[in-house]
Image (tube, rainbow, N blue to C red):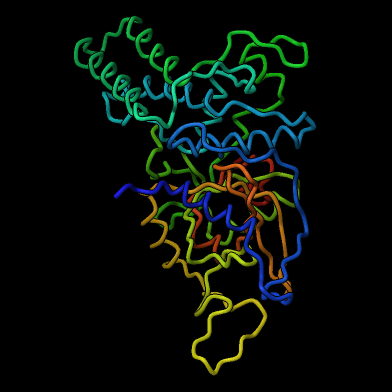
Amino acid sequence: MRKIHSSLMLSVIFLLFSFVGLQAQETYYGLKSTKKLTTSPSKDLPRPVACWSNAGTALLEAELLKIGQKDVDLSEMDFVHNAYLQKADVFLKNGGKIRVGGDGIASDVFLAAAQFGMVPEAGFMKSEKDPFGEDAGEMDAILRGTLRMVLDKEKGVFSERWKNTYDGALVSYIGEARINFKDNDQEFTPKSYAEKSGIKPGDYVLISSDSRQEMFKPFVLPVNNNWSDQKAYNVAPEDLVTIMINAIGNGFTVAWGGDFVEKSVFAAENVAIVPASKMPGVKANETDKLVMEPVAEAIVTPTMRQEKFQTLLSKELSYMLVYGLSKDKKGADYLVAKNTCTSGDGELNLSEAYVKLNTVFLLLNKNSLPADLKVKLGL
């Protein structure tokens, strides 16, 4: 049976949110928006397993809007191309200990931007090959074969010739950024375009919560596809909620990586929860009367959180961009997020319990952190 990509499943659910409504006027949650930040429209995946690039790019585009730049459609494929170049260097330096493929994590976008710059869609020359076609796996086979040959035959002393073969495959199957391009009648290179943007890649940090690590210290995030051993700052589970609420309140969006739990979503009101018992609208028995208010949620203990966290480290993560706040009819707070890996801007309200249990990491501007926490993290 063909495996369904988790980002595709998330996309399907978010699309459903656009069409599903409550049968009656009365609601369980009655969610009302208290703050929403301006973001660029969500986009479909440009290539299989490229959700990480969509997520990082969505955050980058939202940051450009925050600092007063125009709404720009950046090229996700440019970041994918450049990440492959960086992976090649890491592969050869560490003796082939990483797997070179299209996977990654959202912060790879900022690694690539720091070294190579960035381009709008108009500054990227796309390949004519279908990225979802039958030959979608050919490129990775060529790239891995090239690197393995270099590693085996060159014995650590590498000429520059292999790069022509390697990058030639990337150009053929993905495309490449233009050396020079125009934007608003001004000429740029990828690096000059990035410099003009005002974005400082070094300002973006990963935040996670792992009870095995020292509190408030950075540690190598042990998730699948962290090929460059990027580090995350360790905080308590409740800090994950505080950090996002503070960021949104101060005009910053957050890229969220974690577990999308379909059975925890009450699609009629676009809310993701951790119910203590039943989901809204579900009776324990036929004689029960439905109470039209938010259901009680489970208390997410540190042990419960850690067990879930460790099960997710080797799995493919789902990504969302958190860009708003809302409240239910009882005054409880929710974080408003949208899927970054399909068009449509489908919206989901995440309860605090859901965030504590299902977040693997956050990617955000360090200047959005609460002042006291920023000091504790040494940022």
